[in-house]
Length: 108
Image (cartoon, rainbow, N blue to C red):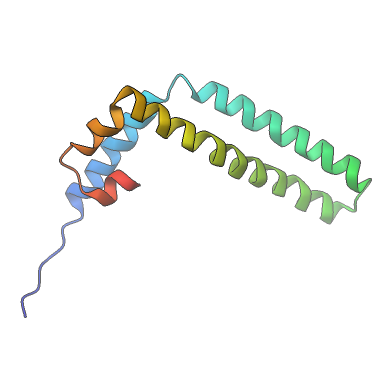
């Protein structure tokens, strides 16, 4: 039985390059995404306040931290399919699949 030494160096480097490329590609959407996240978190906290009333401090902290988590998941579930559809339309998704990087790096 032969053992193959795994060298994560190139994969980690390729992952860093892919992340940098994605950030450069999405740099125009980043300010809008930040504004949407902040506004959704604020309105969710205010909405929880209207539903719950005046909660004790422990519950208020729980609601405030949970609101940002809920909005992060909500925006991720809405924006990810739109970004994938846009990448397919413009052809960058097919182009990225032709790059000589492992599938795991592409999936991350």
